Every structure is written in structure tokens, then in C-alpha cells.
Image 1 (cartoon, rainbow, N blue to C red):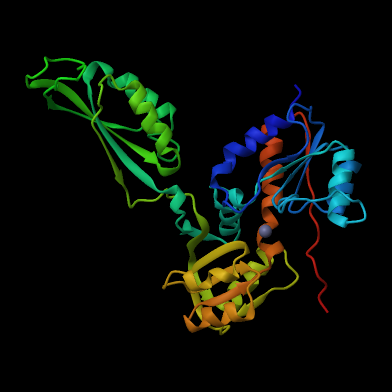
Image 2 (cartoon, helix red, strand yellow; image 1 turned 90 degrees about the vertical axis):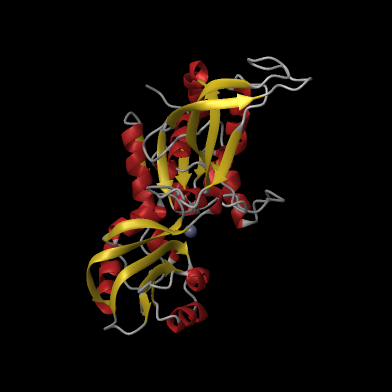
Length: 366
Ligand SMILES: [Zn+2]
């Protein structure tokens, strides 16, 4: 069994859909040919010259990375510039480079879920709601004989997904009424006369991101010339998707003890914490990668925030709000996803070798 670059891309897309990525981000296949056969895959956090050497050594012609290889537009491929030289070397070696970045942060089972699990959190849920993940309730009224066809068409367009279930809907019977006007071409009834029609009230949940496509499916598959429908904004967000995670520790513990737990869970030589070591912590918020700027938006009841790239003034802001901070580093909080990518890809594509490029923690402790 052979696999193509696009097969790996499709697998990653299922896990971390591109539409979840921030609009400033650059994700997906960044180099290579979608129909090229894959020999072996290397997963890594960033595509560095060292990661590229490792890929070449193991004969991998595909790299799956978290950080974009190409983020800002490239204006030149002059090889006396280090990043351009790296890109040129990747092209010369015909290596396909796929990136899942903010989409992998936000998605279920991504960077932040992995981090929350490693830190032993329970009752894990998104820290910040992603408004692009808002949902609507679609309610429409359809003659009984047409309800199955319409429900299937709406489901195919993305309506009615709740967790691991598709085609979720509710149906109730009732009586609709309409009086066709002069220019109407009614499904049933006579012009100028009130028509009563037995109908099913069909309700389904609709993600905001695909609502236009779902409404188009409604128009295409509803038998009426003018389908009646309600599209109502819901307050219940998608429960598994969003930026960062929050959760609670089974047992409260001191900040100092929790700090050590974080350090050991992430296999770090050291980390920095801000706050009183004896402060009891239980409610934890976290954001893998660069999360210092989000401290002002943390929920009120947070005891401790775990992230990376927490600046001096970020920590000050948190402490004013009585929230302790643990800066486990950008690398430290994101590195666990590299092994998760390797394991998921290896399981899905058992016939090819998938390796993880696991660097040691950057920086030297003096
Ligand atoms: Zn990062």
C-alpha cells in the first residue's frame, strides 16, 4: 500500500481543519507535490536545518510541522539568506512540508488538549470561545414525504453534528398554512385560497462557519418555492473547540508543587513561576505556545495560568488579578504535540515510517 502526500494532508485536515486557523496564519501544504508518493514522514515543531537533516538521514520526503515554514511572503530565494537557503534545500530534496498551526492549537485533541491531559487536568474545556465556532439552530417546516431527503441534504452540508454524532435532528408534526398570491408557483393549494398543509418542524444545529452552504442546501432541497425557516444564534458554543483550555486538578496543591509537576510532566530542566509558592491552586488555565498577552482575558476564578512567552508585565497583570503564572516556555508547552502527530500518523499509515524530531529543550541552564 502506498500513500501520497495528499493522503497525509487529508488525515491532518480531518484532525485540525484549516478553517479553524487564525486568519493571519499560514497553514496547509507549503512545499511539495500532492500526488508524490510518501517514503517516510518526520514530525517536528519547527522546520529547522537540523530537522531537515534528520528528514534527509531517514529518507523522509515529507515533514509535518506545527510552525509554518513559510509565514510571511518570501520575496527572494537567495541562498545567502538563511531562511531562503532552508526553503531552497527543501525544494531541492523534493520534500513536502505540511503545517498545522493555530488550527492544531484550537482543535480537539490538539496542542492544548494534549497539554491539559499531561498536566492531569479534569473537566477540560476551551479557555476562550472561538466566535468563528458559534452555532445556530436551523428550524424549517417541510411536508412529511420530503423530510428525510431534506434532513440528509442538510446533514451532508454540515448541519446536525454534535460531538461524535452526525444527522442529529428533532422532528415534530404540525399544520402549516399559506395563501399563494398571484405570481406564486405553489407546491400545493390554489392561488388566492388559504391552504393548510401537514408539515414536519425539522430542527438541526448549524455551525456558523458553514451556515451559508447549509442554507443553500435548504433552498436546493426544500420542495417549497419559499421555504420558511428560522436561523437562531445559540449561546452554547462547540464544547470541544477553542483557544487554550481550562480544567481543575483532582486535588488542590501549592503553586510550588504544581510548578514541579508541570516541569516534570513536560520533561523540562527548569521553568519560571510567578506568585507565592504556598498559594493553593486548583483551577488551571493554559495556552500552549505564546500566551503571555492573554493574561488580561483569563476567567476571574483562575488560580494559575500555564503558558509560554509570559513577559514581566504580563505576569504583573496576572498577579494584580491574583492569578499565579507558570511560564513553561513556548517550546515546552508545544513540544508534546510532535509525538502526538507522530503517533496518530503512524497508526493511520502503518506501512510507512513516521518519526518525531525531538530536540532537547532550547537554552542552557547556568
Ligand atoms: Zn508555537
